[in-house]
Length: 353
Ligand code: GDD
Ligand code: MN
Image (cartoon, rainbow, N blue to C red):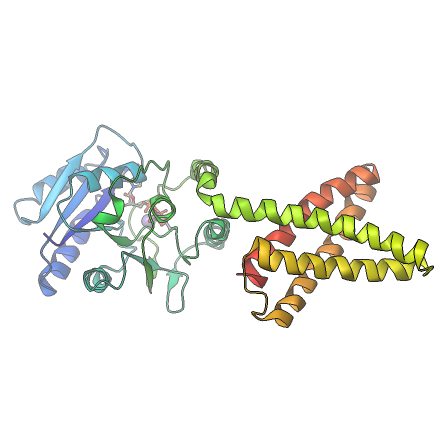
């Protein structure tokens, strides 16, 4: 069998017949040999019963009934566990995802162009219709946070397809809604995104709640060990930064005391030397780039981030000291901590990306 599409449902009585029929047509029209697996959490509105009654009409349909509302991600995993297709797809029941993209996604994996295809709202050509501004901001912020872990533009999408072999022996257990992000982090597959228009549901209610934010943040924390490489980079960046401080002070002393230069002028030169030192070491040691690769452009980028960081440092120092009445040396420790993160992120994702 080629393809298994998993559709988790909870209270989707007004959508269930239509989504089944649309997926069925998509399979027939494109000669896809596959099955549709509905995973229902004992929906109080009777979605599971409706699905059962449609099994006579659609032979490609299977229905799993679970005891109660156990969550979207675990429903998807349960679907995966009984699926027979070589390729596994996931989509929502509420007609938010364009069913007519299924054959395109399927073909991309079959041809070997990708292991994982994401129906993406956040690449050119993709969009969202009918969401409130609030929901858009939430989604964007969550997606932005996920940048720590992946380059994918829409790792929160609920519409994707994956080669089954990618999932073998991967220990997936996300809480809440965001199963795709965990799949991306824990597997190592070739990702391809195609644009989709996400249309907000016309029938029924979204099951997303504030609780999902907590689940999401908990999930993110649990993924940190998967970022070993970034963690090592962060540590190296910190070491280089501390060496830079020592160099700065050393040259400040040298120029002022030995060469007899006015100390404010000395400080400018000491700063520039430390800047060059930090740049060089971060280029070759922290981010492991060839030294000559875009040497000057990147030096300018690195310097720009340093100046930007200095500005943020001063602003924070001022705010914490004057407005929050924190002792200025403590304020400085706090702002250096924050500025360090900004500095690191800026260089990782811009200068040395
Ligand atoms: N079995 C089961 N159990 N299904 C569930 C559960 C559950 O606890 N919670 C939700 N579902 C089903 C819904 O019935 C629907 O088919 C699908 O999962 C998505 O639920 P919605 O309530 O429609 O979610 P949404 O539209 O707010 O969120 C969608 O878009 C997000 C992108 O921002 C989902 O696709 C998310 O996965 C996605 O991250
Ligand atoms: Mn929805």
